[in-house]
Length: 206
Image (cartoon, rainbow, N blue to C red; front, side):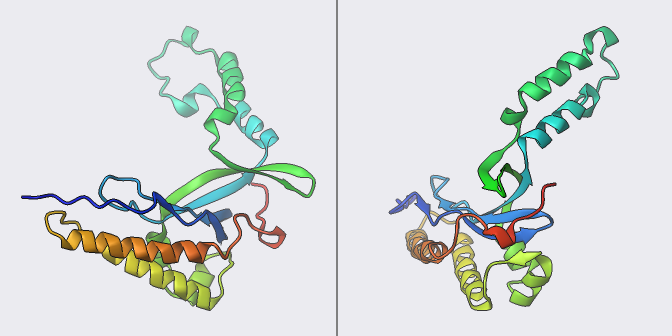
């Protein structure tokens, strides 16, 4: 049976935009990538937490071998906590998933990735696609009710296209073309918003 392949016009749609704060994290919608050979991966949310280099080094210094490994069967002579601590401090930046560096009130802060999830699981499921429910769930939200409804409409139509998975007929090509048209709307939507939160939306240092 013939298998069809859809070639997208673009490999990425939209830009990363700040949407609000949730559980002490600053949340962003990421650009939509054509990350599979055959299907859109989805619209993802990313939760970033405020920290500093000093805070990350302090946390690294507090780590012990037993925090990361089961040491019950390792002879004590092989457990060099001092060297382990030095290694953790020296490698803190490699392990921290730093997404942004900013100057806030004269101090350089880091935004590290703590949460990575599907937009539909938060906005369509947890918030039920409802603006009032979203305001109750989020600590802060940048969208007006009209903007929120517009985004929800785009997401619902996009995820509806994703439900079609049969590549063995031409309906697949039509659905993918429809999905890409919807993502052009998503791109236009994200162009209206800031990449980073303004001062009134900054979260506190954890």
